[in-house]
Length: 176
Ligand code: NI
Image (cartoon, rainbow, N blue to C red):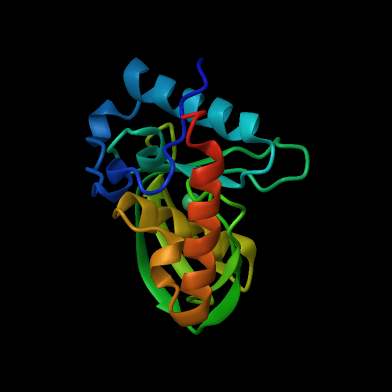
């Protein structure tokens, strides 16, 4: 297993639309080690709740989530699709690829039905409502489509985010 580098906005690889994983390849050592690396990378951040393969420069439709307090509930979703959504909520989000500690409210569907495969190739269908999972699913699928949560921001919130991001880049210019 290895910790992968998380791409930081505005890296253009974050804009790539990821390709589906061929179902027969899910159990392959290559895909399994990508998933293991993603978990190792997520846990190494200590504060992340989810990670999309796009964020570690792998253009495949895979995302992982662990929002348990002890990091012992690893969930992996392959070729995820939201097949139904309903309602709206507006809550705070952040992202490991968006620097500067940017946290802003984003409007998301309140209820989603997610179809995907797990890391063993088993089909899943999950319904989540009014919880952090519902929000995470939408945030991570956005990543797989080359979108970031800051793309949803307008006006003052967007300007505030841009300011924090450029301040971060100025401070880290020599480190990168
Ligand atoms: Ni993110």
